[in-house]
Amino acid sequence: MVNRLTPREAMYYFLDEAGSTVHVGTLVVIDPSAAVDGGGLDYQSLVGLTEGRIQLAPRYRQVVKQVVLGLARPVWVDDPDFDINFHIRRAGLPQPGGAEQLQDLVGRVLSRPLDHKRPLWEMYLIEGLADGGMAVLTKTHRCMLGAKSPELTQVLLDSDPSVGEAAEDLWMPQTTPSPVQLAVEALTEGLTRPGEMVENLVGGTGPVAGLRSLAQSSAAQVTEAISQVANAAPHSPLNRSTTSTRSFAVASVSASEAMRIAEHHGCTRGDVELAIITGVLRRWMLSFTETLAAADTVRVVLPLGERGAEGADTDVAGLDGPDAGWSGEDGPGFVTDLPVGEANPSVVLAQVAGFASRNAHSATRQSRRLNPLLPDLGIVPFGDMAARVFTSWNRHTYNLPIAVAPTPVSQRWLHGVPVRDLFLVPSLLANRALAITVLTYTDRIEFAFLGDHGVLPDLPALVDYTHDAFDELRPPRERR
View 1 (cartoon, one colour):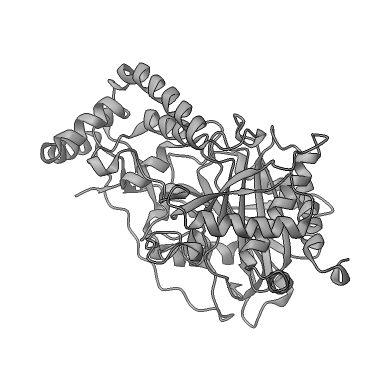
View 2: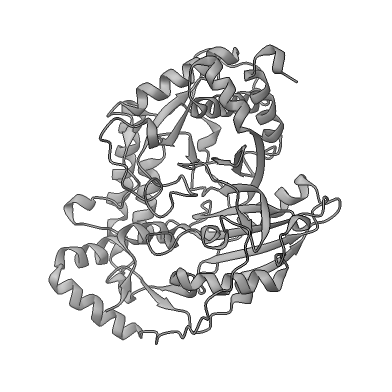
């Protein structure tokens, strides 16, 4: 029996296209000088650690193999030529090795697509940070993450500093099925589900898919028109057509100070995080327009999390599932508006808190996790056509995705070296010029911004905007 991609995994696999980065990851910054006894990190120790740990996540040694004529979803097969040294690479920062050089390197790495002929992940050991630190960047295709395959950093980082011995790995790749074998398997399955096989042929990667292009175009136009009239997000450059060139930036603020701000204003720390992002977006928008109307907003999609109504369905990946410790993506969510037109930070915080509380409990503002089209009918369209329809259908519903890690992350170690900073790398789909992640690590709230360089060439400015927006939320006596 073949190990076929689930409908959701197949959807993410086929979402790869120009202007999309369907990979996610983590940027880990460490201080080698603080390693405990027996700890330390170099290229060889990172390779050895990874080689010992990925046996817990088999997909990191598997490739995606498509079925001829699009008869069925692709399958996971062992890579007979797996070479871990291809996936783990070294990179050095140019002088002076500061934050600007690190973020520029990360942006260039994230701009490159993953090689679909190999397991869909990469890791970079980044050396040459100005203070003697090092960084590790992971890049993993979103289709790989699931119940049996957590994000790579979750496998590598430890909750204590001890450096244990990895279990001996005697992995041997299984024989790869031939295209004929995959086709026969698909036809056999199709006999039990003929409706799905026909849909794969007509609406997926098969040769008949082109016959539906006219209907697809018409349906997309109707869907966009309905979305614009019924529940359209505000017009924004954040929804411009995007390229594959990425910019990356990170910023941190004190979690304990953010909690004091929340207590002072009678709201939650999550509200403070949203108010900071509102301040960042307001400053960015004022950098290219002279004025903002008081009623101007940016619509964002957020994980529902603890804001959800009692009894809400949260038993999904990204909240209570395998990604719960790290990733805040892909769970049930809701859309809310950030009042970027409001200049008073106290009013912004009050409005953000009110909007988020109301919209999280509104059935019309809630959305379940991203799903393949028409799953309740047992019809699962695949391939490039389905990806384009999904992108078009989702285009006008919000301006900006914000992934928030569902729980704070305590101190972590990488091969006995303490992790100083931990930033989540979001995915950036077509027609999204910016994506933001928020993770609380130890006593820091870590913001990461991934943007399209063509739309946001000034993305590094968002770092200073974050600090300024945070500072103006403090009580006057505590401001810098």
